[in-house]
Amino acid sequence: MKMESSDKVKYVLWFAQEHVNFRAADIESVASIFNIEVNYHTEISDVPYCIVELPSEKEAHLLASRCISLRSVLELWGHGKTNEELHNSIQQTPKDRMYPHFVSEKSFRLTVETFCKSLSMKEKVERIESFSYLPIEGNVNLKDPDVTFYLLEYFGQDSNNIPEQPYELFFGRWVADGQRSLIQKLSLKTRHFLGNTSMDAQLSLLMANQAKIVPGSLVYDPFVGSGSLLVSAAQFGGYVSGADIDFLMIHGKSRPVRPNQKVREKGESIKSNMQQYNLSSKYVGVLVADFARPLWRPDVRFDAILTDRKFFKIPQNEL
Ligand SMILES: C[S@@+](CC[C@H](N)C(=O)[O-])C[C@H]1O[C@@H](n2cnc3c(N)ncnc32)[C@H](O)[C@@H]1O
Image 1 (cartoon, protein in one colour):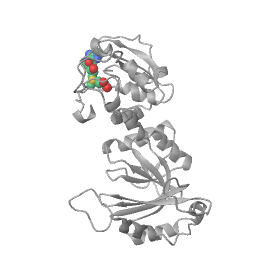
Image 2 (cartoon, protein in one colour):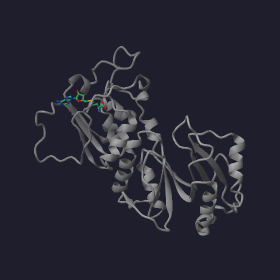
Image 3 (tube, protein in one colour):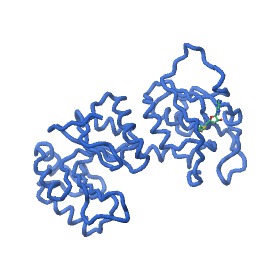
Image 4 (cartoon, protein in one colour):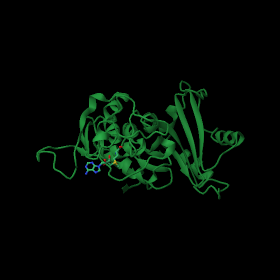
């Protein structure tokens, strides 16, 4: 992680507060896929914000286009440990960076987001009014604005000990959202074919990023099970294949795992999962094989082996 300080454009990586330990790997893998130089002004930690410098907004969009851990990326216009520091820092941000977004042609919204504290509407309005010195000329549009400004206030992570004032404040312009919507799209709750160790969608996607799957990658999972990792790899454009020692699993005949399901539906299989997500064109195939017995010719090459061998039981609320 390269830490630097300069006058270049800074961005806030705003993370979802889940699988915190995978954040850094997610960002670094995606940065490596797109060959993006990320200069860190603060460390990636369990705090859901990290300030970085990126070569341009294009790179902010690229990071957001693949990162699963990211909620959003904002262009940073102000940062401080107190309100005074925040507003001083906004006033020092070059006008030519902010003012093009304040013109009358652009509608806007200013959203206040707090971490570990809820604010009343009155408190939110007071916060919004504290920015009235900014010469914003556009109309307010809460539903579909041309530009969204965010005030982020961080009150720590101890819900039993919430401070009166935030520990840290950030102000900036929304640039892009990360790929959190894929977690919902590929959720096990609606997955056609499930096994009792199907990897959950979020971890599968994080793993596919760490494996740096790109369109055209040839991917193999030697412990494929119900093929969750193949789904996430195919979602990112990989051509996917796998093997498993369990004949019944590979043929979609293993015992159903959903509480109310007595028998498997016709056609339940890894292949039907690919069809469910419109990823059939990425499906190479799966076979029954024992990993302990050499299967492939020595000259066969895969771009990525994406696998998990550990036994995770799916939580009941995921079924
Ligand atoms: C943790 S599960 C993988 C779950 C998979 N990622 C999924 O989403 O369903 C491990 C799998 O390894 C398979 N397995 C165990 N020993 C094996 C071996 N020697 N060769 C191939 N597969 C094996 C098991 O049958 C099981 O399906």
